[in-house]
Image 1 (cartoon, rainbow, N blue to C red):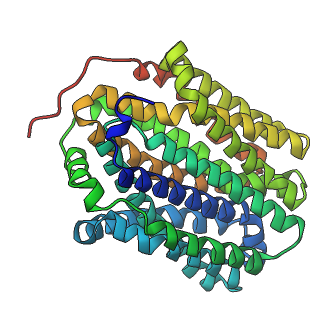
Image 2 (cartoon, rainbow, N blue to C red):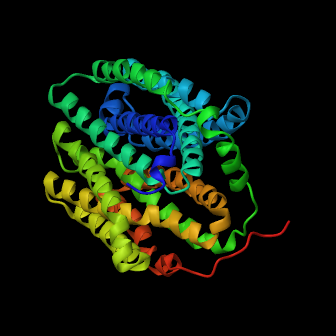
Length: 398
C-alpha cells in the first residue's frame, strides 16, 4: 500500500467503486446492443442500405446528449445526471427489443443515443473529479471496468442467441436487472461532501486554452483508432453471420474476443510502455490492429475471423490510452484540457467508422469493407513518433 493510500477518505473509495460499477453496467448494455445488430436488423426488416444511417445517428445524438448534459451538470451536478440517465439507458435498450416497426426503432435508438451521450459525459466528469481528488491516474481502471462489462454483455448476447430467447426477452430481462442495480449504485456516487470543488476545478482546467497544432497528430491517431473500434462494435457480428455464414451465438464471440483482448491489453499496457517506451508500443499496436483486420477480412471460417478481431483488440488497446498519455505529457499543467480535446475524436471516429464500413459493404462485401479501417490504422505508424516524450508546451495566451 502506498503512503498516500491512508489519506484517501472511505467515502471517496466508495465513490470510486460505485463509478467503476457504473462503467461496467454501461459496458454490458452497450455490448449487448451492438452484438445483437443482426437480430435487430432482422426484427425490424432494416435493409443493409439503411443500417449505416441508423448506426451513424447514434453517435450524432450522443454528441447532442453530451453537450446537453454539460449544461445540466452545471445546475445539478454530474452525480445527479448520472443517477437519472443510466437507468433510462437500460429502459431504452428494452425499447429497442420491444418494437417491431422502423419508426419505433428510430425512437428507441434515438433515445439510446441521447442518453448514452449524457451518460458518457457525466461518468467521465465524475471520474475526472475523482482523479483530481486522488491526485493520480485512475481513469484507466474505469475504462477497464467498461471492457469487463463488454465481455459480460457479449456473453449474454451469445447465450440469448444459443437459446433463441428473442430480443424482447433478452433486452427486457437484462434491463430489468441492470436498471435497479444502476439505481442502487447511484446511491454511492461521490458528491460534494467527498469531491468538494474537484469537478469544478477539473472542468476549469479542461476549459483552458491550449494550441491545437501540437495535438492534431494525436487527434488523428485517436480518430483512426475509434474508426477501427466502431467497425468492430457495429459490424464484427454481422460480418460473421452474413459474410462467413456463422451461427448467431458463435458470431458473438467476435466482439467477446475483442473485449477480452482490450481488457488484457489495458492491464498489461503500462508495463509494456515502461519497458519499451510509448513509440514502439504504439507502432506494434498499429501493426497488430492492421494484422487483425487482414486476418478477419481473409478468414475462410468463423473461428479465423474471431481470432482476427481478438488480435485487433490487442492492437487498439495499446493506442488509445497512449493518445491521452501523450497529450498529457505535452501539456502537463493543462492535461485535462488536452484530454478533453482528444476525447472529441472518439465521437469523430464512431461517426465515420459505421457509415464507412456499412457503405463499402453494401456496395461490395464486408471483406473489402474491413480493408478501409485497416488502412487507416496503418496511418498511425508515421504518427507514432509524436507519442515520444517531448518538450513541455505552455498554453496559448488569449
